[in-house]
Image (cartoon, rainbow, N blue to C red; front, side, top):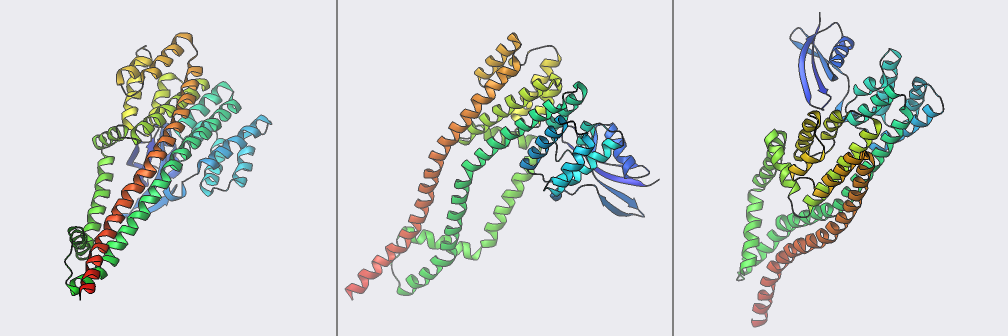
Length: 407
C-alpha cells in the first residue's frame, strides 16, 4: 500500500504533518477528516523519492474578503429562491472571479454530491473558510435556517472588512511617508554626501561637527553597506523566529497592546472583533464553549486569546462569561459589566451588538486621533533628519564662501 506524507490543519488552524499508509489521496483525506483534520498537501513516497501531488497551493489559496462576501450573499439569495445547493454552487463557480474560490466551490459541490454535508465540505478548505464560518453553517444545517445564517455571516464579514480597511487606511500614509523618507536619506548618505566630501577635503575646509558626523556615517555606509543590510535581514528573520515561538509571540502581542498610540487601537479592534464574533455565534445558536474556541482564532492576539481560554473553561464549569473578562484586566470593566447585564437579562446577543457598535465608533475615533498625531510627528522627525543632513552640507559651503571672499 502506498505511503503518503501529508501536511494538514486542525479546527484551531494548527499545522499538522505526518505519514499514513493509504490506497490513495481520497482515502487519506477521508481518514483525516474523520479526526477533524483537513488536508492541505500530500506527497506519495516512492523508492526513496517523493512524488508530489499538491491538493492546494498556498499562493493560489488567497481569496479576497470581497469575493467571499459576494459568494455568501449570492448563495443566500439562490437558496431563498429555492435553488438546490449543488445547482447554486455550480452557478457560483462559473461566476466568481477568484480562481482559488472557483476551485474550492467545485470541490465543495463534488463532496456534497458524494454525501458530505455543507459544513464538512467547507471545512476541507480552512485557508478560505474560517472556523466561525464553518461552525455557524453547521448550526444552520442542523436547525434548517441556512439562509438566515449565511446572511448573518455575510454581514459579519462586511463589518470585519470595513474595520480592517479603516485601520489599513490610517496606517498606509505614515508607512509610505516612512519608506519615502528612508529612501531619500539613503540616497543622500550614499550618493550626495560622498561627492561633497571630496570637494571639502580637497579645499581643506574646516568641517563643523554635524558635517563630520554625517561624513563618517557616509563612509561607514559606503564601506560596510552589506553589514547594514545583514543587520536588517537578521533583525527581520530574528523577529519572525521569535514571533513563531509561543513565548515570543505572547511577549510581542503583549507589547503591542501596551504601545503608545498603537496599543489602544489594537485593543479596541480586538474587543470589537470579540463582541461581533460572539454575537454572530450566539445568534446562530453555536454552543457557548465552542464559540470561545472559535473566537480565540479570530482575535489575532494571543494575549486576548488566552483570555478566551479562561472564559471557555469557566463556562464549561457552569460559571459566567463576565468574571474571567473582569479578572483578566485586558478587557475594560464596562465590557464585563454589559455582558453581565446580558447574562442576567437573557439579552446577550443585544448587549454584544451594543458593545460591537460602541467599539466600532471608538475605533473610528482612535484612528482619527492616531492619524492627526502620527502624520505630523513623522513629518517632524523625518524633516529634522533631512534638515540635519542639509545643514551639514551648507555650513562648510558658507565657510568656503568666506575663504574665497577673503582671498
